[in-house]
Length: 623
Image (cartoon, rainbow, N blue to C red; front, side, top):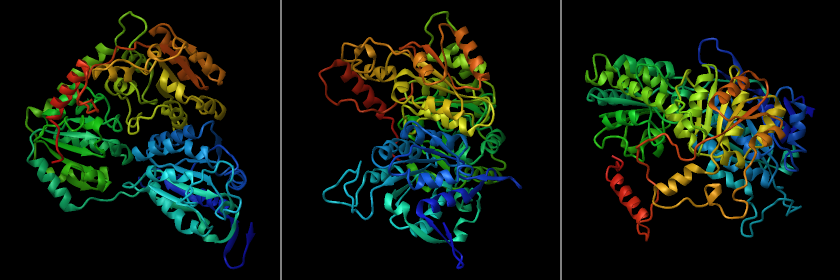
């Protein structure tokens, strides 16, 4: 490092990147006098020849300001970073860095998770030499017709901002855009930076001021008054509105304002997967989780509504039941920071921050009231849902338990300080319906990308983010086998969480889908998989113990509750294994469009196609 009298500092590209990241701070709340903290509180890294000798050197020099944590799998690191961002409500960003080649491509799936869930993660990967003099280098994939193409181009479809730094000076223009993208309420998502090995080591005279501390505040873009008036008019013309609370409620820190708005006008609130725990389970306006993995009581409210006020949701098919969950005549009003999401299905769009939009909409509705019979609709649904959940989660004396009974056991142990999460498979439906939120922003179900493996890596990432309570993550046996190495990362880093492994001997929810659409279970359960070892079983407790976790296998619901209580008080990562029933699912009647063959020799498939066509008859066509 060299200092100059002209106000510049001569450092390498890698060193400049690290210094800039260290200098970024963000206000953690927007209350007056709220403190600022590091925007980038840490790096999850696996070093190799693409990032060890330049970026690694610089990270080591700044290890106290930007701590580096060792992951075991690059995809796991990226998933942990995404879960961290969700738990921090997009107020802080983890960096995930890999070498070139397979280390980089391993992170592409994690980038897809962050992209679909609108979560900020900074991915930094090594790249081939810009000079091309040593080509082809180790782990380089060559493209005969385009020598500029590398595997890092695979990130382009799954990030908001992509750049390959081919000269040190490009950081001056690129890094402010990186930060802006990661913090933008509308365009928030993952960012990728490729660092060619020669450029990462090149030195440049950077302005010293480039590394000055910068304090950022999350913007709250206010909605256009005309848009708000049109939304208010649409609401005034409605008699049976429903609010659909999405993930944007959490990112806007809008839970309190949304609850007050709903209570003021007696509007039922249903939640998307990402919006779960926007309201507490006992709030008078809470009607339950909506959609394919939602409760029938909540879906009935949505179907009866004459107006849908969608707050901070991208309205994916599991929320809308493939756009059959709302009445064909119901109007859609959207409040969303992202114009792209606000304009879906020809909605009356309000583009702006969720909290500010809800707050501004209230006074425009003075004097308006919903139908008197509708004012108590949420409470009716809540009573129905509570009775349903109580029955579903109650022990029945049989072993193994259902998923719902496992959820009930966890509900008996967890407190308002705890954080519950899952992803993919059958657990999202079981938790979305049967979990009663005790605190806002205390639930994470990754269902935007429905990524198996998120549960374990995500539990580790959420443990970084939480400063109270315990993180509980529920995972199926199939997902455990896909990506379990971050159990060791959690043990090694001292960031403990509790993992509950639900073993039903296969991918049972996909088996259910196969059978439910007229086919047979094939290559999903262990019993119907090809090979002489199809009956072989994994000792998950022994495996987790080998990775350094405290592990236990239970054989009763009482044992499960005891193990959960012990794990909650432990300072180590704990893994609790329980068998679960493969075919005892919490029933839900919502429609979901999947690709069923139009012609088939199988009678069951023909019946499934007829049911599909019948369901599609009620699908909204975009207006």
